[in-house]
Amino acid sequence: MNIIIVGPPGAGKGTQAKLICNEYNLTQLSTGDILRENYRQGTMLGKEAAKYWSVGGLVPDDIMINLIRQEMTKPVPGNGYIFDGFPRTVAQALSLRDIFDELTLPLTAVIVLDVDFDELIKRLSARRTCTKCGKTYHMMFNPPKVEGICDLDNEPLCQREDDKPAAIENRLKVFKEQTLPLEKFFEDEGKAQHVPGMLGINEVYAHIKNILDKCK
Ligand code: AMP
Image 1 (cartoon, rainbow, N blue to C red):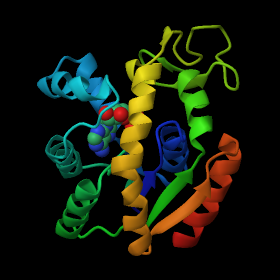
Image 2 (image 1 turned 90 degrees about the vertical axis):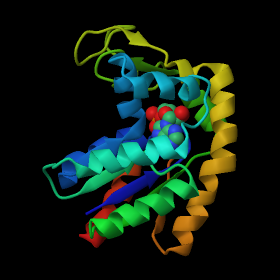
Image 3 (image 1 turned 180 degrees about the vertical axis):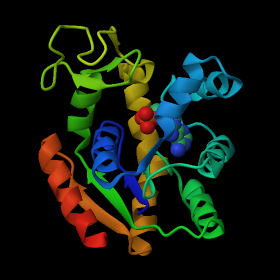
Image 4 (image 1 turned 90 degrees about the horizontal axis):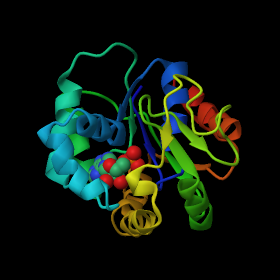
């Protein structure tokens, strides 16, 4: 089973990808998490990519395609991949299709999370992220038990650089220009399955599970 989850920033891709990953025993490839981990570790890739993500832009396609190609050559346990945050451009989608062909992997489904832009701004600006494990919280709707502290590991929460207002504005603009055409790309391929991302986490997941159970 190989699943792609697409949607604007703040749509809940990472949250849903984790749930899918656990239920269907998949390997989660979250490019945003990989880039942030590289940044924390001070790698060349991490430093280069931060120039783009810190201001809400996209990291160039060649860097991202190489990264995903490398990740997919590693042996992984489980029944397939869930891609969260990749592809984000049509060029990336075309390269991913080539990689799938080379590795003779099927693309099972593309889940498209639909969320209004006003809602995204509210979600992103109130999002706080654990500096260590990356778990995310919403200050109003999903706060941690102790303010400013992660429930899982007691580490401090912070606001991601790209969840600050100027970067949010740019991320949404970039999404409209570069990532939205992907939805049409996957619709034309007959793979896109739209899910109402405005619902609560469990309700969104129920929609996704309903779709994926039919693909098993
Ligand atoms: P995310 O955690 O998925 O919101 O990703 C955070 C940031 O990492 C994005 O705003 C981009 O700057 C960068 N990024 C992640 N995945 C990609 C990708 N597939 N292509 C280009 N940039 C990416």
